Length: 364
Image (cartoon, rainbow, N blue to C red; front, side):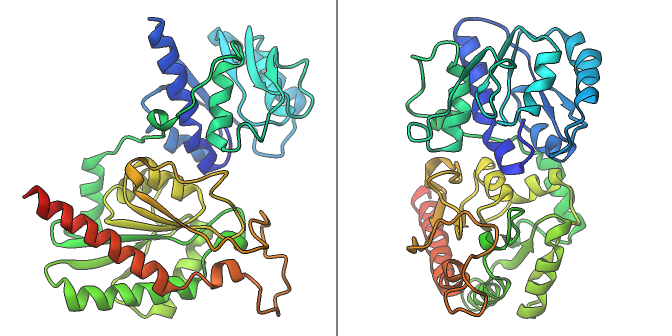
């Protein structure tokens, strides 16, 4: 499995296809995954997976002989029939090769001709989306086959409602009396993918004022979610907003709790990040903000148009840079994120809230 959180979520598309293809042929299938520890809790919420084997080799660690020993002592003993290698690196194909798994599928990547026996060169124009590339791996044995529409295979994570209730009680949030809006201000890739903390802070104030004036039946709770690395951003948002409705939980919850909290949100505001993909996979309305990256490669895979993408499509974007290549002293520095104003996002949130209220009225 990939080591990036968002990629690991999108990889569920491949798992769903493998399960579907085998069931169509009335073949019983067991799917295990080899994954690094920090994505394991996400994978545990994918019903297609039978077992998660922890990958002890962190990103960038070569460790040739250790990989060989791991393959022989752990993977080979399980007698797998097939393996799908999602990362494109040469070293990621070593373990399946040393484990002598009969069918080894993957893209050619870093000249992996000898390591993979079912392979093809990735056609980026034919498969521009990451999920299309993952899905393609399921058809390398029969290349003429493929799925044109992958909507039915979009990621869907299971939710633990009991855990959600426990978390809300611990946070002192009464779900029947509260409206929960989630901010996900982090993006592991770099600053050029992160909407500005001051924008998140101003948005929180706009929302608080709106709920105070128009929705007194519900108490607004804005929860900031992210990893330990995002805590500084979360604290900055809280300090700039000076808003009693804000609760910074960055680094204070594990990934399992984050999944269940996201599932209980009214709406989620996120950057193009791992949590954006998690939010899409729990089926909650969201607004996804894109700066240096492109929704044409890794959009939120949200069914029923629950996700709305906001991007300015400036001439310089997408640049796919971790940091803005414009000079910090230039007025154009981070323009792709600065010019997406809090008011713009606030108005989109109101549209989604109004749409949801109207649906409830029509049902009654």
